[in-house]
Length: 243
Image (cartoon, rainbow, N blue to C red; front, side, top):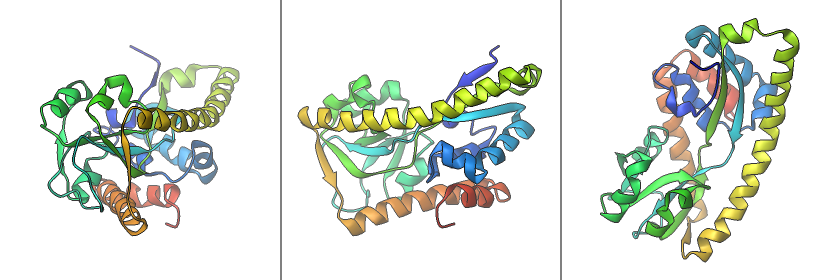
């Protein structure tokens, strides 16, 4: 029905679970190309889905934990009901929180009725949903990345003239660079707006901050490798620093 789609990796993990590894990357899209990660992921897309992985156009901003009323002083989320999507469910479970899967369209009401104590969302976007009206705290540090692949039907891609394929590839590579800078700027603009609106920042102490991030990423990779025992370790080598 469509030849190209700009989407979230979270929307097709059921058919390509390896795509979930992009949320754990320590590199920009351009750096991933240089390390061979793009080529490896494209090969998986072509063989498993019949899809060409044109690029990762963003977003390279972090997810954050937002809380309605309760505060935290450590990486322990025990006793907190946190709205999640499958993208960061493992992180919240690993940190001891009770993960509650709720679609974005129902999150405001869940906060309003105290069904959840908080939620995870990128550093940009909560005002679009009106959630800032039900939010008192945002927790630092952030974790994971927001992965947005750009995909093309493989048959259609192969039928394109090489000149046009080169144009699309060049445009995707340029977009990968621009979108990182764009959303980095948007994230820097967003925080002062949230603070002005009355949302307070909870900055975890250094040791707890390190623990928070470590648990989130360890749980993420544990899930990836558990689902993909052959490809998971290779993806970790390509996407995680020091691995």
